[in-house]
Length: 123
Image (cartoon, rainbow, N blue to C red):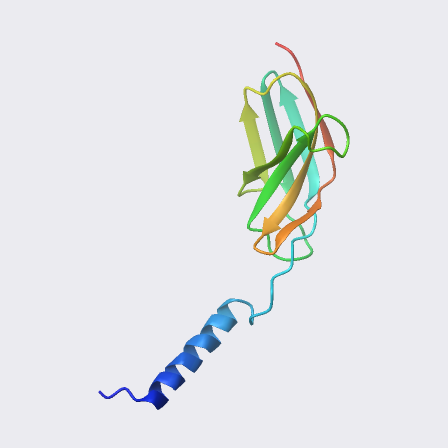
C-alpha cells in the first residue's frame, strides 16, 4: 500500500472531524451551574453531606467543598475535591462550619450551592 500526501490529508481530516465531534464540536465547554439541595448532618467528630448535581451549564467532572467560620466565607477550607455528589469526613473538630459546594469541569468552577450550617458537637 502506498501512502500519498492526498491520503494523509484525508486521514487527517477524518481524524480531526472525529475528534471535534467527540469533544463537543470544538466549542469551549461552559462552567457548571450551582449544585442544589445541599443537606448536611453532623455527629461527634463526623460530618456527612449530599447534594444534587447542577441542571444548568456544563457537565460537572467533580465538586469542591468550601467551609468558613461565618456565612459566605471560605476561610477554613477553600476546596476539598470530591468526584461524587456526596461527602463524609471523620475526626472533624467541634465547632460551627458554614459549607457550600461548587461543581467544576475543565472550563472552571461554577457558582456555589445553597449554604448549610454544620454544628459539630463536642464529645
